[in-house]
Amino acid sequence: MRLLHSEPNPLNVLEMRELNFCPSNWTTIRLSTTNWLVSSVLDDIRNWIYNNLSGRFCIITDVEIVDGKMEIVNKIGFEEASESTMFSLGCSVLHDAQTSLY
Image (cartoon, rainbow, N blue to C red):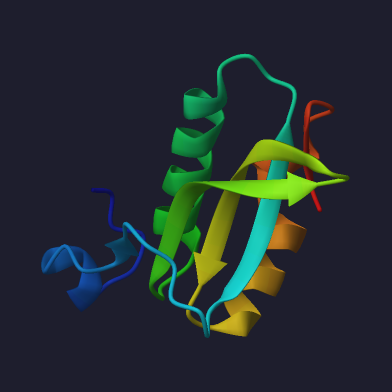
């Protein structure tokens, strides 16, 4: 864990920052990628969130019906809505031609 601030984040220390489910009241962003190595993209996103944001988040894979077809989608959820805006504007991984938000 790299510390970019003078004080450590208590959620990081207690390993309570990333959840393995997405509560219904959180702000979610759906991620679409054509990259064949999706896990690498998600790891880069996870590292960016750990280094640049401070609130709780989740990265989950879910099945949704899109245009009448079942598709696997990756969702990124944030407890604070302002962090979802910061993520969508500032995350360098999202500025790749193969990755986009919808």
